[in-house]
Image (tube, rainbow, N blue to C red):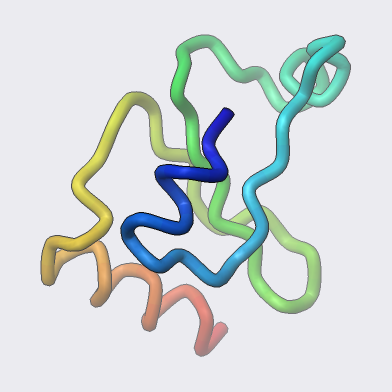
Length: 69
C-alpha cells in the first residue's frame, strides 16, 4: 500500500489504485509507477512514466503550472 509513503512525505492529494487494470487500459498505462496529472476540470494534462522525486523543485514547479490551467 502507498498510505505509509503518502503519510511519510505529507502528500495531501488522493492516490488511486487500479486493482483490475481497467483505468490503466483506458489511459494506456504501460509502466508502474505511472502518474497522471489531472487539472481541476478533470483533463489529463501530463502522463509521467516511472518513479519521480516529487520533492524536487522541478516537480513542484510542474504541479503549480498544471494546476493553474
